[in-house]
Length: 325
Image (cartoon, rainbow, N blue to C red; front, top):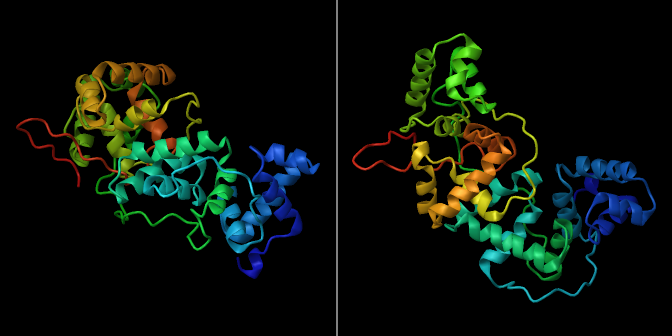
């Protein structure tokens, strides 16, 4: 840390307690101070360190030796396993919790690994240590997985176009936002004083502009957000009870295929039986008022999917997809 980012005694005390606690509330209670006071202390430290989260702040404090992890006993962990080390090191990065799925997906792609392997490794670390991610960060230093020489910011994403290749006009924007809000395509005309043929004509122009081969509004909305033709909406947090398998199915809903073929195509990609995929889709749709388009917007709004995180379309037999590359 630079001189400007040197921690005060109070800041070090709060961060040290976070190594032993699950939440800021617990850390504040252990120090005998109100939660808002602990939050203010951490906010000041983050501002000086130039990071937005507590985890990257704690990483810098551990790396500089201003905070020392307690000598807790670690359960037997595969610290020499490259997938485990990669997942363990990810907790230091300066991304919000909502952005972790997208971060893991990018790291997996860079290492030619299935994203499920990284997610499973991180889940196993959390379950094995029964600790928060802050505690897991301290344990990484104890186990020698992190040394302090690593960067707190994730690797730069692959360069993207400064401007999307296609932008919707005002009418198309209204239609796409309606889809994102969960309005079925057949009802959009009533809301916008358009007949169904006019709505479909505008959707066809959108599909052509973004290279979407299927007629699925879900696949179209994914293309809209992944190419940043529209900004992702603000969305509520994802349901915490979803399993790893359900999250994988949710991410795979971006496939450019017809909706009637979605479960089979996801099953092929994930190696899961169609019956299991269908059950996961049912659970997800119950959370999203039965709107696949809302699920796509929700995924982008909470960081499960991110702009530029493109998945190639699944080609139809004997037909070119025309997907944007």
